[in-house]
Amino acid sequence: MQIQQNIPLRQYNTLGIDVLARHFARFTSVEELGDILSENPNMGQPPLVLGGGSNILFTGHVNRLVLKNEIRGIETIKEDDQHVYLRAGAGENWHQFVLYCLQHNLAGVENLSLIPGCVGASPMQNIGAYGVEIKEVFEELEAFHLQEKKVYTFSVNDCAFGYRDSVFKGKYKDQFVILNVTYRLNKTPHFNTSYGAIEQELEAMGVQELTIQAVSQAVINIRSSKLPDPAKIGNAGSFFKNPSVPQWQYNALKYRYPNLVGYHNADGTVKLAAGWLIEHAGWKGVRRGDAGVHDKQALVLVNYGGASGKEIFELSKDVMEAVEGRFGVKLEREVNVV
Image 1 (tube, rainbow, N blue to C red):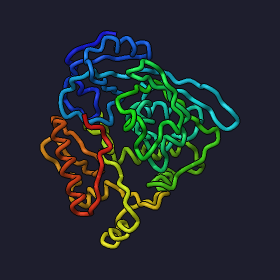
Image 2: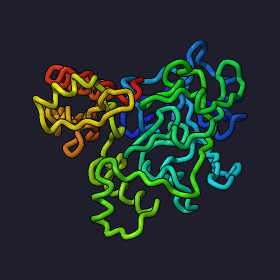
Image 3: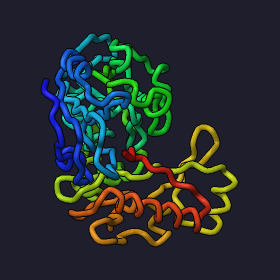
Image 4: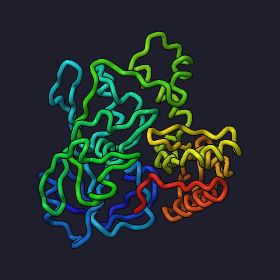
């Protein structure tokens, strides 16, 4: 597979940031990946792996090898009385994988409908939405070690999943390329409709009999009403993580702001809605040139066309400072800043 030079990355990141990759290559198999790495011109620098480009902010040109993961395929590995185990290539579109599960009446990922990105990012980020996280259906993954040129298998414990976190964002950052992910889907659904506005949307849809297809459509409707389409306006979905605070801090904030949104975590802390904090700090709908905070969902930063990565980054920095100044709560970026 040929390594290309000075390739524009605008079409490969959903924020639409216009930067160049000094070296760029695509791969559709582990064999192609190995061949590319043997020619890697960036001595001493780990490659940057791109999937759907939906969780990345480029703040300048990329002077290392950029690898576009295009490993495809979905196959049934095994099944038992309760589960079907599907292995999907890391380059598969995530929502298309969800649709595949729905078409085959396999439950577990319906609440994760319409999340942008590829399969390979799902365990890296431990993606989650509407009360469900990927770790709940994760079985294992295979990943290629960039230095050792060897494939390793990771179990759920090996991945050390946290809130939008895994070993691939910390301990093993830039060391592995995820090749495929195996999910454990349920033959009999266990519905989770209590989070967010799913129950209200199902009622508005006139749903009489609850199905995974109905739950998926409700999630799609909610997300579409709140979140901008990256094909129409550049964005990376949720730009910030929802912060968790001690119970005492939540109580103090709730006393001052009775409408504060919070969800109790198992560890006794309370998760706050970052979008609510940003909105009530006065940033919802704010626009600076072509960089802005979305006018319907303050959790989303947008590129109206010509914003640079640095402008988006500076905007995020100011939003974080404003939220901390008003509420005493530190926000953390969910996107990867490069």
